[in-house]
Length: 242
Image (cartoon, rainbow, N blue to C red):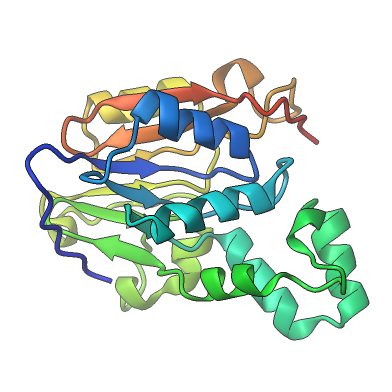
């Protein structure tokens, strides 16, 4: 989806990456570090749910910002897509097990063991990408080997590495999440204004991990697209990795 921004001079254009149920961390980032104003434009890269302690808190907060009139542009992540598919395919008991035990988001369910209607409505309307003058905002990446990269929605949700086509990009930057990236690599990509800028620093992971160096992850990242300032908020939800 192409977005034309008509923002006021004093407003900022901000992007926040994968939150994964870390509501307290998100709230701290938005209200204390960013100090979001109604002149700002805030893009979310998807994956609001699962793993962290308050998936419902994250969704409620994002929905409330929209209802209060903030300029919020939420994208779809693979975790939202997976949940929507599970709702279509699973019976009630299987869905309840999937959400509670596998995704670790029991707070998304109502008393009937079904996903709350307001969350389904929110996730169903999420876009796969936003494209505007200088940036392409997407959850995972753009597959430039695809016959039609901007119709390849699976890659937008699942791609682990984008090999940029500089001709198609024409000077634009891709900003994405999905793949947990060490903080020093994110900082380098931002400082060098590379064609592809990752922002997912694995906010949920705060303990020693078998794959990731936990000293270089565990933050929720926000990029100011106007100034290329990177705002980094350490996890304050005290989540544990698995």
